Amino acid sequence: MKVVRQVLAVLIAGGASLLPVPIMAQAPGGTLQKQAIDECHQGRLATDRASRLAHFEQGQRLGEQAVAADEGSADAHFALFCNLGELLRVDGETLTSLFGLRRMMKELDRTLEIVPTHLEALSAKGTLLVKLPSLLGGDVKEGERLLQQVIHQAPKAVNARLALARVRCERGQHDEAAALANAALVIAQEQKQMDFIPEAQALLQQAKTSAAKSKEHRS
Image (tube, rainbow, N blue to C red; front, side):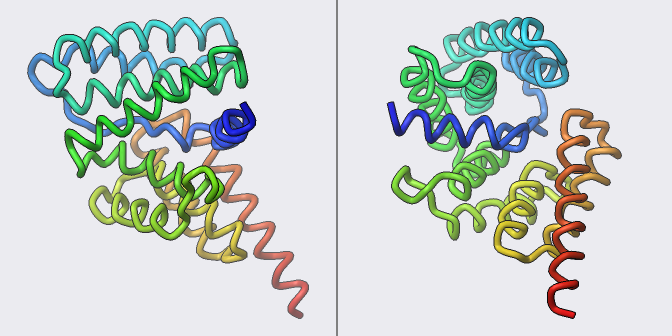
């Protein structure tokens, strides 16, 4: 359970950045997975616990149906991963956390098994790698590589920029962190990804404040 607590702490502290809003195009027959992703997105925007739970639970059911209908669909597995992860973040550690955590990781790994270049899954994987301690499978270098790959391949990616900005900020590279957070904020505003805007604003302010303090100490 100690391992579960540590991973859940990462999920909760990670905020929306851990589970990115997909930029995938809806394929023919992808109605269920699209609905599941929409529920995940709406749950993030909800302000009360009951509404969040309702969206994520419905998203989980739709995701499970999408996987059952097409087990070989990476997007279906990712839609299920999104809702499972958000359900874990709503309640934190519960008696079902271990099972939920394993299910979540299974769906993420299955997504990448089917489509190794799945950008949203790579972004989520990269975020996990930079946040988790090495004892739990974390790998900052590999996580950064994946996040940079996502940014290169998807110039409008918000989540990857925010995750990378946090790494830069923790490392003391505050100007780089501010630049990444600012870019993420601009993109989120342009794309109307409302659930990312508060996070981007907070991270940008944090990076700017830290950069100013660092310059004061050097002067």
